[in-house]
Picture: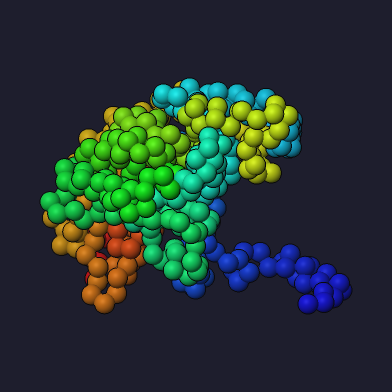
Length: 453
Ligand code: PLP
């Protein structure tokens, strides 16, 4: 369409005065746009455990923003790190050039990750970390002469972001059905949700380890020689807090080893202290070949993700001519100075305040509070691990998801931010949470769920 310069100027001027009342131009992600715009929830500032709306009303952050603000909000070291960096080195080319903080951050991150997961590749989001890990897996097999291993295995109900690779290995139907045939050569393990006997488990559920054998079924169907990698969330968040049955992840690791399949853990939500250990890798004591992270890496302050690779994967790429690019992949903003500085400020905060393990000291109290909701009529399951809770509600007849969405709206009005997916309420507060906040959150939820239609 031809753009009329004069009219454009007028429009721009007009918009200057349109302040926040105009909600029409912004197409909001993963949001009921019309519902939101009919009754907006606009946050103005944040500090510690709380968001504040214009006018001063406070809302307790029960979900660390979106599972990312693990150190809480407006933390001095992080704010300072951003301020200092922006005035010093704003941008450095990501390809064929470097800056000091990239190397410093990678070294510190590797120090927190167990085993040989020592090589760190920077991205800008969880979705990009997933794409990167999938590409690393396929390319790894190729550089070592097994280019026929291209198949990727995900899991039903998995969430690995919204780009084509992650969407394809992901297993949430609503996220997939609109977008055509997706990436070819992908298959899915069955999920571990709703296994009989597991309802109201405290921590890891007892039943379902054998579901890992689905990978054997894949091997029998496709042949191991076609399979590059299997990707799972060690604990699935987005589909509604689905925990791995006891022994499940260990069994998956064993089957991968037997068949030369790489194991990828998507730790975008479990990374950085959520389970009471730095990573789920530590909690479950299972070492995958690749780990994807984002969110808590920068406390949500500046977009950033990171993929951790075992040394042997990196080494496999280092074989060609020394002046040749080894891995044809990367982003303009990989290892962006501001993101690196932020992540370093975040790591300082985590380390100084012991936040990467703090959840373990609150986990028992948290668990007790989660399971205190068991007597409520609408509750059909309760799940917890570390500082994560899943509260599953019975769907309203003929209107799935409506009951949980009502709970979300009512909780917000009552001063508590939660997340819902389907009819499941998820909680994942900042790791600086205190017992009085936990009491408020569960007191509020008890009242709301009791009175839900
Ligand atoms: N992987 C997992 C396990 C996630 O939970 C998420 C986001 O919630 C993603 C990937 C995608 O991350 P992003 O939204 O930063 O792209």
